[in-house]
Image (cartoon, rainbow, N blue to C red; front, side, top):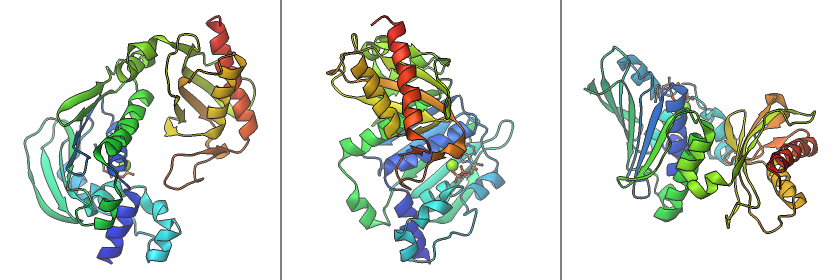
Length: 327
Ligand code: ADP
Ligand code: MG
């Protein structure tokens, strides 16, 4: 059973970036106003996420690394049919602890600090620790006990690029949280946490991109499944990007959506800018019942019940934004 569990965790914790995603999500859930992600080399050497959120008491820490529910995984066949991912919610820390050496240091406001260490799924130490309020999760030797998973990882630049994409996404989705990413001790980017999306884009992508952006006003959406579309889109005339970059958030969750990409590209075409690559950060609010998030269990792709109307809505909103800037 221990082996199956380890394989299961390795199957769901796909790569360093999946660890970062879960830890940053937890920090934001904990109400952090500051989240720092530090990566050593390709991330298997070390991933550290520090936040100033609610923190955890000794009992909460013990509970946090336990398995919350009985896993639905009974054998390898279940794993391969994708069932593994279904039981994953509420089990991120447990799964990470099963495939690494994990230390969590945490202190609730006004409480005592505690450090807990988990190695390959077993708690090896829990003791008092001095630390500021909030939580630091330290993951080292990721996949040390899952050689197959380790072999599948790409080289350092690729793994770090995935970490960068994930961290960037959460930074953009949460402009009121100051998100910092460090690689081997050097800062990759740091958002200010002032709540301003344009400032966040500036911190993440630089001045040129930020200045090419125009606002997508929230009220330009025609009738349809989407309640609102808002965010920023680069102007074809000032945008000099040589690659396409779309960050799409559906109800605050980072996703990829074919309909949204088509809509942005179509809006660009209509505006007679066939050779330009759009940069866009778009927030869509929609009735969750009309989105299918399970198109691919481990990927970010979503599909809407009414894809073509959603596409029209996004295209109209983006076009309106570009026209407003007087193209
Ligand atoms: P989930 O987030 O789905 O509940 P996790 O395994 O990711 O499952 O986390 C387990 C629990 O540990 C969380 O529900 C939360 O109570 C606690 N926790 C995890 N990370 C943090 C954090 N950074 N700050 C405060 N509490 C945390
Ligand atoms: Mg979580």
